[in-house]
Length: 382
View (cartoon, helix red, strand yellow):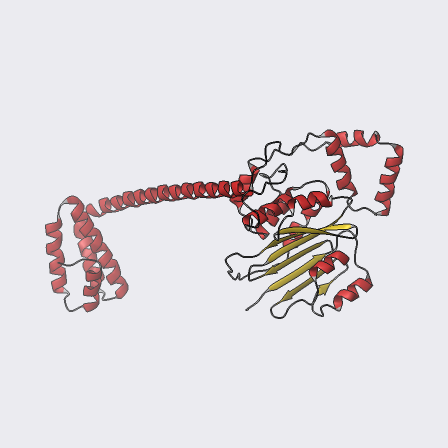
């Protein structure tokens, strides 16, 4: 397979009408199209549609994957649940950008393989499903997705070293499954995330059901009526997230960082230091493991030689029996036993006697070239 491209679009807030599905069918006769999704895979050719236009008109989420290293993610949310100005503070480059379309703001996250390495065994199915929960989190006020987009810009060297970071959201060191899926999909450096997380506060404790119930009962009647009307009509799919964000804003402490913002250059340098330190620790652990394995092998070797030393005449007899079979596999076993006897003689200071017996054995079996070759390869020369 020379080429692989995967396109997936998902409608979350409302299903597609039959007419809209027909409009999408005109773009692709091969795509799997339902009231909530559009999925197509290409091994040749290309998609005729414009993903940006499709997001503006039909869909709430889009994922694209190509085996030459291109990856992109788009999320669309209503402007009344996510502030376009807040989004713009994080989406400042090609790797993280955003635009408004009607009543929506669309976030576009992008990764291009800097090394130009083709990827094989790719399969985009299931990736968007693992990522899409971040959309609800963003609607509820969780800005970690946007900060990850800013980090992607820094990692792609789209920012100057002096570019200050935007406000650092809480919980960067405890990314949930969907945010982790985003970071992995966009290939964001884990060391860069760790560097950023050093200034990230712990998230505030979520309210209990009793606290939420008490808060709701104190809301003005007109507000509660409006909330119930939205809930029954289904007119606002982000109602729960908006209410939770409002509660947090009113009752929970601000967990955004209060320290001076770091720069993109400082974060990249810290990430490089963390990477070097981690690699040093890995190398040291690998060396400790190697030494431990060598010591274990040496101890096992000594135990084997101790057992062999108990009855060396029987070992020599076994060598003669193996050679007598004239079978290659038995030759190999016999040669290994001779190697053991040589090592035992060197350990115990009896090398002269071993060499005499080896010379006698080579003389007796000099007309067996296969055996002699094995003896030479094993360093068993007289």
